[in-house]
Structures are given as structure tokens and as C-alpha cells.
Image (cartoon, rainbow, N blue to C red; front, side):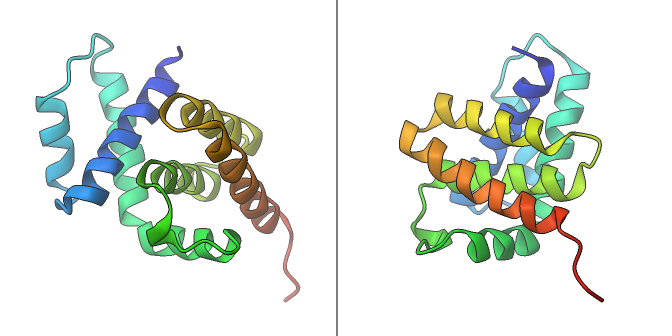
Amino acid sequence: MSSRRKARECALQMLFQWDLGKDSPAAVPELFWSNTRLLEGEPLRAAANELFRGTAENATEIDRLIRAHAEHWRLERMAAVDRNILRLGVYELTRCRETPPAVVINEALEIARKFSGEESVHFINGVLDSIRKEIETPHPA
């Protein structure tokens, strides 16, 4: 597994903790890392923290995009893991332009296969691909 995928998985776990525990975004990384043993070290920790913080800081806009593209689904009714995989994917699609969209979506799907189920994989793929199309389409002025 690549260190970038491991960073995404750690960021997802922090997002899950933040979402369900309602802890402040500042408190989550410290608590998460105090209970996590990883051999990869500081680069992985820094990448995971950056993904978590960026997603949490932009959650309002990210959730707006998810709501607009998840037809017939309320964000609050989605499985928490799926909701946070989507949040992380949307953050990367909209804010981490150095990573190609196809890679972002593929990574989200692999993480969904590991942490969720096959139905979730199809759902997450549809929502992220719809958002990708929207942000890649130039809007008339």
C-alpha cells in the first residue's frame, strides 16, 4: 500500500472521529495519533493531518457539493464512513489539483472497498464522478 493511501486512510479515520465524536478539528489529530502506532513516521502523519484539516475546514462547501450530487440521499442519512470518504474525495478533487481526478476517485473507491461495501463503492463512484464533471466543465460567465 502506498504511503499516500495510508495517509488517506488515516485522514478518513480522523474525519470519522470528528464527525461522530463532534470533537474540534484541532483536537482530533492529537487524539488520533496518541492512539495509533504507525511505522511510516512524520511524512505520513503530515499528509494525513493536511488531508483531515483541509477537509474539515472546507466541510460546509464540501457537504453542499455532496448534497447537490447525491440524488435522493440526505447527507445525514448516509453511512458515516461513506459520507467521510465522499468528503475526503471532494476535498481532493476541489483543492488538491496536483492529484489527477481519476486517481482521487480510484483511491476513494479502494478505501470504500476496504472500509465499506460494494454498494457503497458504486454510490461513491457516481457522486464523485458527477462532482468531477461539474468542476471540470467551464461555466458561462
